Amino acid sequence: MRYALAVLGTVLTSLAAASGAAASREALVLGYTASDAYLAALVAKDRGLFEKRGLDVDLQIMALNSAMPAALSAGAVQIAGTTSPVFLQAVDRGNDLVAIAGGSVAERTNTRFAAFARNGVAIERPQDFIGKTVGAPGIGANTHVLFRNWLLAKGVHYGRVNFVEIPFPRMQEALKGETVDAVITNDPALYQLVNADIGKVAATFMEVLRVQIPIVVYSATRDWAAKHHSVIVAFRESIVEANAMIEANLEVARDAEKKYLALPDDIIANVPVPRYRAPITDAMLQNWIDIMIRQQMLTRKPDVSKLVLR
Image 1 (cartoon, rainbow, N blue to C red):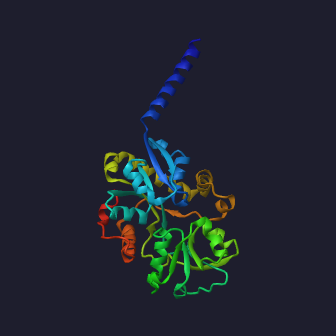
Image 2 (tube, one colour):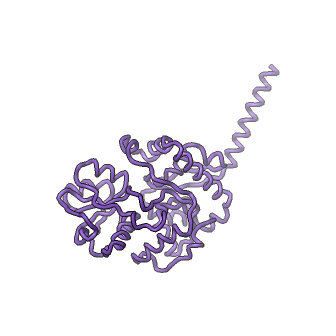
Image 3 (tube, rainbow, N blue to C red):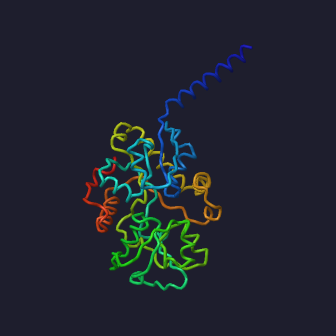
């Protein structure tokens, strides 16, 4: 009986300690969209990396990335995976946001972003896009901005191309129906188009990038970040560890894709996992700023040194 009571006492003590630890965890909501740009955060959640650092992270999927700055300001989410253009335009509008970590990145050798032309449309060089109707997943979205940057670098003003908004799921239909001549897209939608036998890749457009750039940045309001420095450090450390896990074993990424993004098995098996980088340098964001200013997407040039929380 004494032994049983001792064991029971140990169990109750352990349960109380676990309950206290759970109660002491910092709760926060992380906003993200259905994209593998956020895989590091999804892996960190799936593998308990947030939890072991005292964070109770609730993943909140959002339909539109453009809604994230408003969600941050309203306190509906505390950290958001904003695309770099959305982040910079929100700052330009007066939202006091800071970048706390990076997600997926793009670089000169990246071929996951491409212009895809339908069968019967001959596009062999940048000048061939002049006068064409090109579908973009969003006007002002990452893909659209980076394609326009490529056109400018190749001596073609993007104003001579007719851009229309075509969501990723409707791109095959638009190409087959010949309502567009081409689309600008990225994986996994690009993989699906290539395997649908309805056209071909006409161009990849990351070759003109000066430096590696973040496709998304995890951002927060400056006020919230200043009051939760230890949370920011724990979050960033979790992302760094998740990135290392992904590099060491792609299966952890595949598991997270299946669980949180509900991607088809063939895409999970065949689409390359992006590269991820948690640290954000001034040069990385400065390249984005320069690209957006050339496209008149910002009203002023922000002080890049104040945009990244160190």
